[in-house]
Image (cartoon, rainbow, N blue to C red; front, side, top):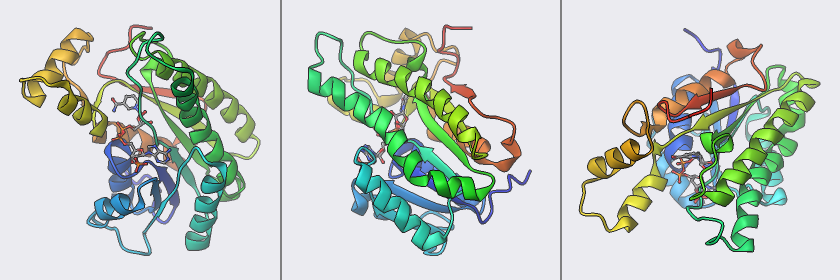
Length: 262
Ligand code: NDP
């Protein structure tokens, strides 16, 4: 099926790794023009330069810190200078903070909200006018099942994600006036850089596969394994497609059945 993404310009934040990288790869395969950012511009360029379809007129990369309003605006302006339009925005940049309430200091708590809330809001307000002019504007906020199912070991992260889910619904209502759709993809445990870093610092004698299978069992993931970034990217790209034209304020869970809510 043609997703009608060919020739459309899509911004992907946090594109140098994991879900952002897989989304960029899939968008290029669908014929889209991708504007990709991360804070470390060198790593971003080196990771993306070998992707199929990554020619200079299809892929624009630049360093951007999405928590910084000016940086988000500069990046968006540069994208418009390069491609002349913006049809989609994937607010994906992020990380999680594995810490209980007792182990989270105030600054770390604020940083979580800064990244989750402003990582979306800074980008949306910078791109809003261009998305409206697209006539098929679509925003996807990459969020977590934690937003609805908090875990005390991820106390600040759970709270910040709940706030982002709430904000996403307000954005969907507000941007509907412009004809722009806003949706969420809620992730469970996805095998990306975040989990590889945790594995490396865990000191375990298990292999990565054994270690992650044990976590999947402990967390009660119905499908018994972590997901992979391609399994998330598929849903992001589907929501970006103009074929999803009646879908806004929706959430898609990609968690292998880890969610306990109905
Ligand atoms: P990765 O750690 O693999 O990649 C994170 C990306 O975000 C990198 O490109 C990183 O590059 C970029 N980034 C981080 N902070 C900023 C910033 N302030 N401004 C711009 N770019 C930034 O993450 P995942 O692929 O695992 O996660 C993608 C999203 O999914 C995140 O929002 C994450 O919170 C969410 N998620 C992931 C889960 C999982 O199990 N993997 C579970 C639930 C949610 P750089 O460091 O150079 O900036």
